[in-house]
Structure formats: C-alpha cells, structure tokens
Length: 127
Image 1 (cartoon, rainbow, N blue to C red):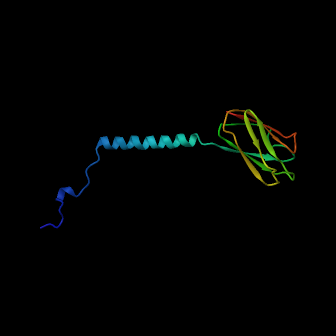
Image 2: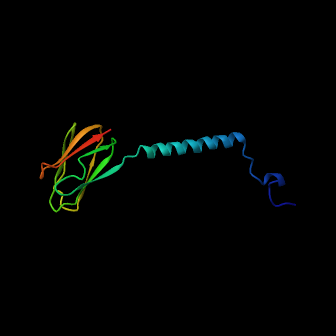
Image 3: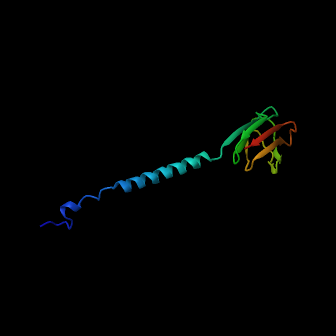
C-alpha cells in the first residue's frame, strides 16, 4: 500500500505546451522592449564648468527634460539665471566648489548668464 495519494504517473508537472511557451516568449519580449524604451527616454545630465569668469562652453545642445549641472571651479561667486524662451531660473549665490542643477523641461533656445559676471553667456538649445 502506498502512502502518497498520487498515482505513479501524477508525480511530474504537466508538460509545457507550444502555445504556453509562445505566450511566455511574447510576454518577456514585450517587457524587455518596454524597459529599453524607458531607458532610451531617460533624461541626461550634462556638466558645465564655470572657470575664469566664463562657462566652459558657449553653446550646448541637449534634449528636452535634460539637466545641466553648473560647477563653480572659479575662486569667485557666481549666480546663474535664465530668463528667455519662456523659462525663468535664478540661483542663489554659488560659492566656489558648489554645483547647481538647472532642469530644461521644454524645447527652445535659452540664454544662461551670471548676475555677478554679465559677460558670462551660455546658449542652450533644447530639442
């Protein structure tokens, strides 16, 4: 007499059918594509150095949603502002070594300047 209520042929799981396998392949493929699309649309971060009373570059092209990190490598204070293209941003005074991030949520051309050093100019083209 056997103690197990299962018969000898019932001990293994049911076989995976071709239909079930095909469904799992499609589900996994869909999830991988969704993850790849999410990563492709992820916003980027770009570093701009402030040194010699100037921005490290005079012009930069970025994508909508990207962020610029302004790092003060000068021995002077800076104060970044944007007042163009329908966007306004005005930082506090930025001491040497400090980084300020500015997010660009919409497309257009934007002028970035420093209140303390008015000759500092950066044009940001957001696609």
